[in-house]
Length: 172
Image 1 (cartoon, rainbow, N blue to C red):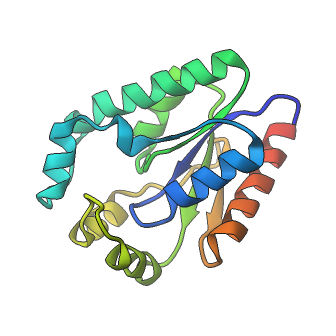
Image 2 (cartoon, one colour):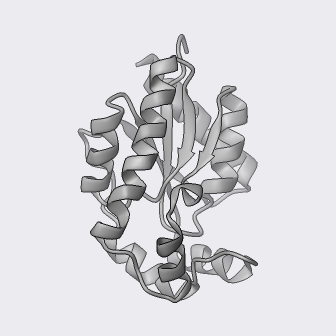
């Protein structure tokens, strides 16, 4: 890779975005940002109460992530940010801020993801919202620069698969 891209690690809650994203950033030698840190307090309170966010809730959050991605792209140093980016419209909004984004969709079975969510401690996203996230998920389309990576392996292996996919996309 001549210049690392800005990568969005996407997927439903519990798919491993933070764990894989952190390791992917290390493998690529770029900064990492967690989209959860971009949520305003009202969004966290809403999700903690078991209520899914609507598009109006997500707009300022996506804009803040897009601004981070734009800044990282402008430095030429790349970066990795975890963000559910479940709908095409959300990814389009992020791409409008940073056109060269690469998306890595972490994908797995409902059972695997539910098991991971149930085992988490101290996370604001309850298991009760998993089905709404799965229903909202729009997989990457053919015209979207990205890759789907299965999460059916240890996180280190999944991060390695993601890094290989990003390198192929950056070189292609």
